[in-house]
Image (cartoon, rainbow, N blue to C red):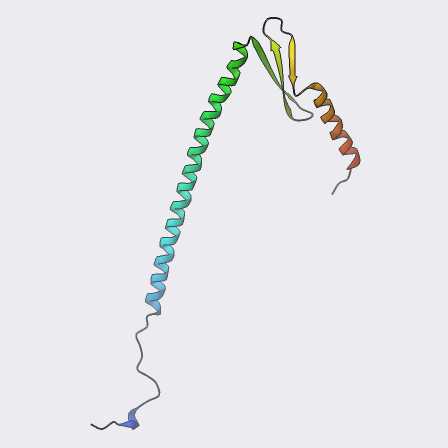
Length: 128
């Protein structure tokens, strides 16, 4: 058996092109990853919504319970908002005499808070 060296070329026989197949597999893997990621995001979103719904139900029940406490103690609660401070103020009122028993937070504290805001406004009266 003789080998003909004259017919040999420097180029090896061509291999089949597998880069297209590799790209297709990579695309399939990426699509599966995106689908799984969307599914995980949807599950997390649903879990958060369920948690909020439970929390809202518990909060509603808590508010109902708190609002019933004064009637048991023969007290009334008067809720208002201090617009200057944007803060809730609660007055506890005797159910029989309609006398204010307590203000939460106290009027002194509200005045102090208001004056502190004024002082801060005087010190830092600058526009950026």
